[in-house]
Length: 331
Picture (cartoon, rainbow, N blue to C red):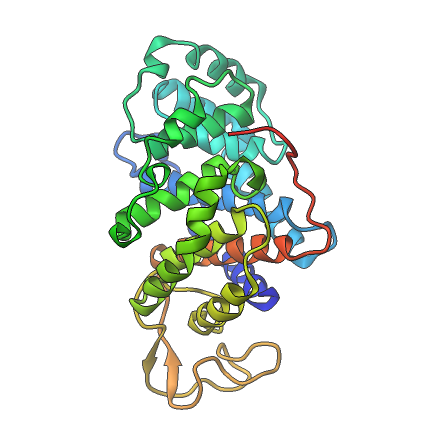
């Protein structure tokens, strides 16, 4: 996992130009799913990697530098103030800011504006799916504004909170449940917040769900489920780690990229031992008679970030010293 996490973080660092915001980011025609969303994911996942690794660890160094890069992209919070003024009831500027706040990066003007908007009836009554509302509640907690609802009640309205029949798991419910866990546990930094019955349910069924994702080439969702396993109280079972991580490691190419879905390689020329297929002086990834498929940024940035995130969490949970950054408390 050390090698997998390091290679994934190296890829993100080497491809950080893909996260650079365009000059027209504030214009109405700009697609936030291709601009602010990737940058917000970079900030959130690298913030967690930074918090769950120790200073001096190369993973910590790269993740912290990527958080600083993302903070510069939002002009140290000023861009998020502009976004919030343009769309005061949009939740994405609030959630992106909360990712930075979780790393101690603050902007007084944004928090002053947020403290006003978050007290309005319109903010509390915004209609959204329960898993999205949990994300907003966690953001409120991070920023320090009063929560607009009870997290436990919202949690029980989610697919996961109802402890559904495990065979009803599919792609949409899978992504929803992973983010429920991330929001409840503050992205793995507070595993004690997960209620016992849900933690037990997940511990039972995660191995089968991860196996199904990997069997169908859904590496992105499988990686998120591995991160979920590391967000629960107690370290992930050794059998799960030993079975699943070699599969995800085999999918990662020599540049460190992980595809969202599909086969990891295409047939063709073998990569040279000292070329992009080699790592740590070893043989090229994929073996003779194969070459690595090119990776498009938008098709692999998230799955590569998730791989680094899940690996860092898993390594931290298996560390002899695994202090919770937020001990005590509840959902």
